[in-house]
Image (tube, rainbow, N blue to C red):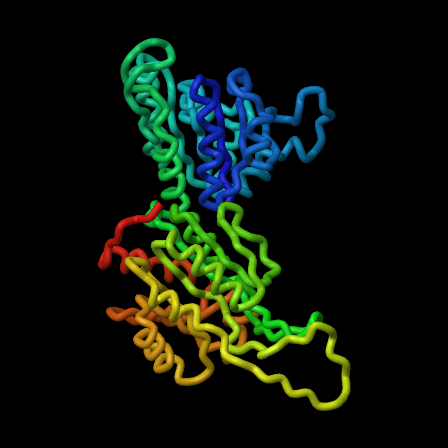
Length: 404
C-alpha cells in the first residue's frame, strides 16, 4: 500500500518525519508532498532520505526545470497510485482550500484529484483553531468523509495555551491505518512467522526441497505489520521481496530454521509456522559433486519437528500451524492440532490445481478448538487476513502479557 503524506507549513512540520517512519514500520510506502511554506521549516532532502521516494515540492517540477507531460499530469498519476492521503500538519490555510475546492499547488490539486480516503491532522494557533471559519471548514470536510484527527491541548509554540497542538504521531498513524481498513488490533504483539521452503544438502550442487514459494508466509508478515505488530520473519530461500519493516532471518536447512525459531521464540507472543519444512534430509552430504555412475541410493533421516518443539516450549504464545495435505485433509489436520497442542491449524489440499504451491491463490480451512472456518479460493493476501482475524479472536479468548 502507498500513502501520500502532505506536509504544510507550521512548526509541527518536523514531526512528519517520525510519521514517515511509523507508516513504514507497518509496511506502508510513503510519498511526501510539501507546500512551499513547509519547506521553510524542514528540507525536502530529509523526507527523501527517510522515504526513499521522490519528494514533490512543485506543481510542474522543480524550479528552473523544463516542464514536460509527466510533470503536467503528475498529480493525476499520484492520485491514482495512492491508497490514502494524509496531511500532517494541516494548517488553517490548507483546510480552507480543501473545504472550498481551491487548487493552487500540488497538495490541494491532489486532494481534488484523488478518490482515496483522506485524513487530516490540524495544527495551528489556538485562536486560529477556534475561529468560526476554521470550524466551519472542518465541518464541511467531515460531511465529505474526511477523517479529522483532533489536535491536542497544551502549550503551543506561539506561547499560548489551548487546543491546536498536532495530535500524537501514533494517533495519526492509527487513523490512517483505519482509513486503509487495517486495524491496529495486533499493536504490541510480536509475531514470529516462518515462510518458504527449506533445502537439505545432498552435495555442493544438489539439494532436497519442495514447491513452496513463500508467498503465504510473506502475505502473513505484511498483513501483521499493517495491523501494528512487530514481525520476526524466518524465511527459507524465496524470490520474493521482503516486507521492509519485517525483521528477517534467512535460512536454508530445516536445522537452520529450527535454531533461528528457538532463538527468537522468547520474544514472540504469536507464532505462525507457515513454512514448508523438509520432513527428511540426507544422513550425510557429499563434500564434492556426486558423479553419474549408475543407480544412486540416498539414505534419509527425519528432520526435527520444529512445530512440535515450539508447542512444548510455549508459555503464553498463540501457536498456529499450517498443514499441506493431499488426502484425508481435515482428519489429518485435526490430528496435528491435538497432537501438537496448537491453538489453530490452517490446512489446504495441495492436490488441487491453481491453489497452494506456486500460486498467488489459496483455499484453506482454519481449525481451532472452538471453530472451523472455511476460506474459499481467494488471494493469499485475503487468506492472511482471515488467519489473523482468527488469531485476534483467540487472543481475546486467551489474553496474555505482551512481550517487549
